[in-house]
Length: 178
Image (cartoon, rainbow, N blue to C red):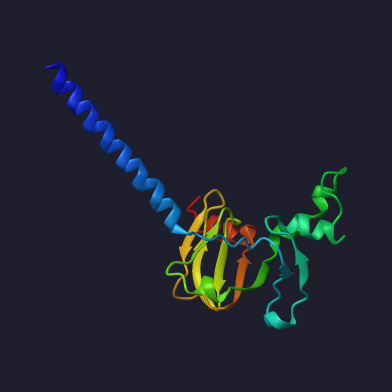
């Protein structure tokens, strides 16, 4: 009985060692590449009937917020001083757009899978890559992972349109029966 238990224990340990070795070798062969798209963003206030090319584009920090970008540019006062927060409420009533151009290497573009990951977006956002709508968010408390393998090119433009949550919520509130 002891020899049988020893035999099975050794076989299970051997099997676990083989599985572990396979896992390690598969990790080494996966060669995933990450391209961080944090730098080089621009943002603008969306204006009705004005084409995107005619908007006044300003440098933006991503990750970040419209308020922090406006603060860095001196367009709003520090909201944490006195009652300044009251004077910047207009920011959330506007629609804002962020854009970034990026280039992929020939080696990167040849990979089979290209995933775009957003670790957080404002509540109501529409995300476009190369003029293709990828998704529309409606939840600021989740991440978004999208396969862009069929859309991505060597030269790309990523656009995030942030819609005024105030106006969307007002429309929803007006539909309530109370």
